[in-house]
Image (tube, rainbow over all chains, first blue to last red; front, side, top):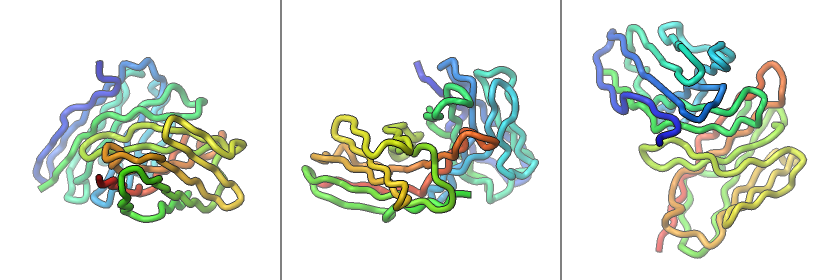
Length: 114
Length: 115
């Protein structure tokens, strides 16, 4: 069983479109994250949710809206896509907010904006 | 925010040698530091965690050291194998507090082990 799964794996879309990426974890973790890895391979935190509550919003444009319907799911919706949004987006989870925070990552969703 | 430097973008070594990767950080002192491995097209995978009060941590052929005076962590892979070829990321974390659990990642060092 995949621990952290995200869909789709690949997304190719036009500028101005709206797209969503879904993430689910079956580890029973309380905390989930979205990270962005750009073409230079920097992995930057975007959002973190702890038990459905937003904990971290790392100065991300409000075109990006995370949603956590329950603690096992964290989806990412992006409005009005721009060229600079092209990147690989990783979902991750950790046991809880108070732990040392070892992260379990999904396989990534590669977004290409044309 | 934390500035993290990993020694070089690429490191090439011969099979059987010891690979040593460096992670330097500035600003605050992390409560702990993690190392991850990332293969092409895959998500990072957790390898080791070392706490601020630990000098050294080992796991099979891996060894991590943590020098809070130098603000540096070293990651060693002994008896390296071609299968160890990957990008290795270090991630110092902040202490518990208002930014609890926040991890910043270095850009990573791409290790290539050739036969």
